[in-house]
Amino acid sequence: MATIHPTAIIEPGAQLGESVTVGPYSVIGADVRIDEGTVVGPHVVIQGHTTIGRDNRIFQFASLGAAPQDKKYGGEPTQLIIGDRNLIREFVTFNLGTVQDGGVTRLGNDNWIMAYVHLAHDCQLGSHITISNSTQLAGHVQISDWVTLGGLTHIHQFCKVGSYVMTGMGSAISQDVPPFMITSGAPAEVRGLNSEGLRRRGFTPERVAVVKQMHKLLYREGLTFAAACTAIEGLAGTVPEADGDVGMMSRFLAESTRGIVR
Image (cartoon, rainbow, N blue to C red; front, top):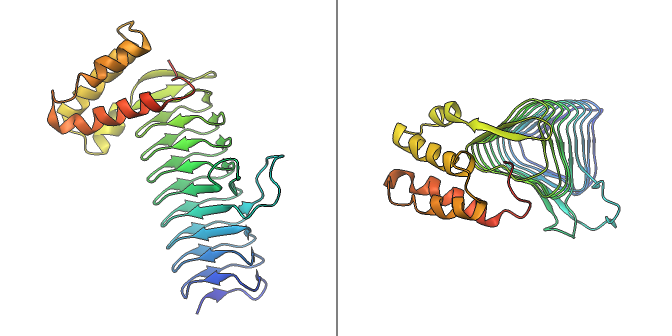
């Protein structure tokens, strides 16, 4: 049976896995589902159509699944979906999605979310992401896998951040950030390549060399955006083990709607 503190309020209809723990004074809404092994600390409020996976740790004073901060929201049964093995620290706020988008705010697996982080409606986050204190994501933001967001990073609505990106403290991002880059500043600028992060993720020197070439084409050769995209596509096949990296970069650039941070 779930371990529920006697002061916690679990509304009828909530579904809690057998090994879930709920701390003092927490409130779990009727449309919430929490899977096995997840620990909900004290004074946590989980509302709305919220699904939380296995083995998460949710610290005190978090607010998950509240109505989106969007004037168009009319009480529709939109969702918040959280995966497995996430660490969610104090005072975070994750909002439901809206029907103007896919209706779901989503967080993947194995993420480390520090205090005071805000995920607005319809944000889509992958896995293995680290988000430092007081980072704020506006609506419809997309964050890919293995991203590290420095403290006080602010991201404008509809922006996309590619895999393996690292942002510096206080970055203000209003355009898309291509994979593999380091960005900082307000407004943010790309400062270089996240080489150390790539090595930590097991990239071989050959793969890193191809990623460096993509960075050079985008930021050091004085090419137009279209010409840089064409040159990056031409790297396919030069180092077969890096073809996935080239393909990921090419897809990201082709799908960018806000333009990229330059």
